[in-house]
Amino acid sequence: MAPPSSKARTALAELREDLRGDVFAPADPGYDAARAVFNGMIDRRPAVIAQCADADDVVRAVRFGRELDLRIAVRGGGHGVAGSAVADGALVVDLRRMDEVTVDPAAEAVRLQGGVTVGQLHRATRPHGLATTGSRASGTGVCGFVLGGGSGWLDRAFGPAVDNLIGVELVTADGERVHADADENPELFWALHGGGGNFGVATALTLALHELPVFSAALLRYPPESGAAVVRAFREMIRTGPDEAGGAVVYQAGREPVCAALVTFVGGEAGLRRVAGPLLSLPHRAEVVGPMPYGRVRCLPGLPSGLRNHGSAECLAALPDEAVDAWWGGAEGMPVPGGSRCALFPSGGAIASGPAEYPVGYRDAGWVVHPFAVWADPADDERATAWVRGIRAAVRPWATGAVQLTLVGDEGPERVRAGLGVGNGLRLGKVKRRWDPDNVFRFNHNIRPL
Image (cartoon, rainbow, N blue to C red):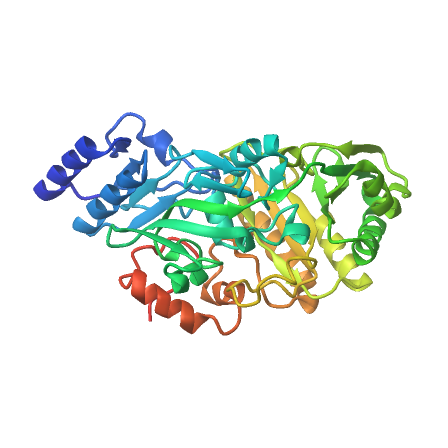
């Protein structure tokens, strides 16, 4: 990295003085901790990291970056497995200190700042008996998750997270603060329903909440040789059950291979047991069944930060027996046990019946396959990523071609277009041209300005 110019040194000194938050440059103590991300494969050295304390700090940071012609990466509150939150030689606008959540029970709405995680959102809404669709991992950043579409345990009942979006507070590429909702900047609001961080820095979102007085779940563990039968029973449960039922089937090869089925249910234990009957009747090794806090539901243990990882996804139109066998056979071929897992999520319900006009490309999928490899040794990089590609290839005969963008990293512009939906590219490109003509916000599933 070249030595900073006199102009850059002066601008950096002014940024340090003006920002309520902290500023880190490469020579500063704390810089390495500030640039570290969840994925151990990512080792990038930004020119400046601005840890913003409020929206005014974000304005100052963006204007600083534009003044020095720096590329700008945006870091939300979550883990960001793709590593796009940091970039070599760039300015990182870090929102993690902006983590305020304000619940309005009367309006059944919640306002949250750009650094809030899904876990923080759940903890704030739970005392009010309210909830909205959040990620399946509590460490996920809410803003990136929502604006990218957002699939979680409640999506079949309440729609993907983005369907619950009421308003967005944004700092644009010009360093201006704007608001977008159905009445104010409606075209920008439309684009934010799936277009992610392409149009500015989301400093706050307002989301609709739903009554959730009781939430129940059943976590069942089976011998791995029962895997295909478990998937078929789960498939039948989703086919015949209500939209209030969801969950996943997951395979993990640790010290001992595990096949787990999670059934989630918006309602009480009696209803859950009726819905989960096909799975409860299969021989299983362990079970936990009953009411539980929605925000604590998970299939498998969380993962520590710093491990190497790579994940992807494929949306399936249907799940015939041949697809079940292809998915399960690929899952069992997992080359790097550790925390690697292969998940199968049901779609449909409120996902399919949601607003068709938004740029969310996976609404018509019936199922989503999500292989996620985790490993420690760089020598395993190729075989781990090859396994993920192999899972996708195995189920491709049943794929819709769409993709849930929040589940994948940088897989090229064709996959981005598939995630945003056929026919939306031109309209999104025009919105990008209006709000970010220089493509300042490019470290994302990028939409290029027309």
